[in-house]
Length: 95
Image (cartoon, rainbow, N blue to C red; front, top):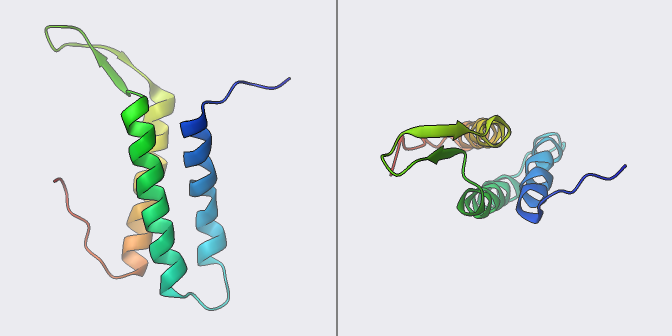
């Protein structure tokens, strides 16, 4: 049975799965790691623009939380933090 998977979710999933391939190569070069950071950031931005994690009513109260989408956010944050640590970069808390 095939499940319907949204294109943006699938794209983000594939990019996140590249993380182990990049860090497990014999000589950890900076270029693939920087490229991965860019790809993850770009794929996540597309995902976040398309799919909301929190749904609010008109008064601003949260009416629904999508836990699967929040899990995507957690994994993305974890991978970017690890990449930044390997690159010796300090991530910003918010923009």
